[in-house]
Image 1 (cartoon, rainbow, N blue to C red):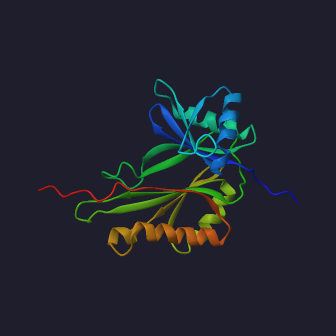
Image 2: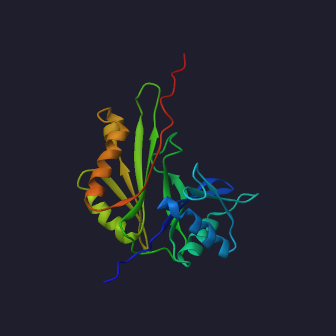
Image 3: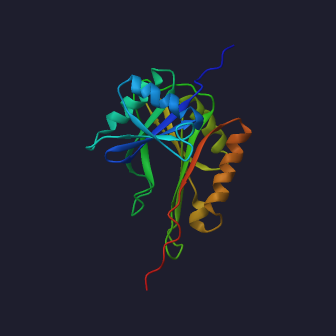
Length: 218
């Protein structure tokens, strides 16, 4: 029986008002991503010390563009045999001053409904000078079927909040009250997520946004 899914996946997210990052898995297929988008009329730049063989892509326009462009990039790739998911920022999920910990929604119409247990996992960390008010949240992105399975596994150990739309699960938000309470460091929590998902055969892209410890003002 043929395995569902694609041999290459791409996760697309905005990095500026006029730019989006394309994260391929595996990374050594980034040239395929570039060529597929060129066929659709989109030009991207490949980045990384080993580009163009291994790396990531950046799509850029001179002027700001809407979230629908991210969806068009994702659809163009999926229609050309590369499973792609585009995400747009909706709002802060933790409120307050934590603008870099956000709520995401999926954009695009023809994303793969089934994957090969390939996820993009990104942890966002907010630190305060005193440690009071520290917050961390991890987001997992992928196909609806993969996310359903991942959420069942993760919810047994973590505080998870699935984000769904009429087409299925779009993402999983994993909150980390242990970090806020000072009982666990983010990298330990991220490793725990790896252990849970890896034991079930999940793989993919992992990133961490950590601004470091800010200095207290005198």
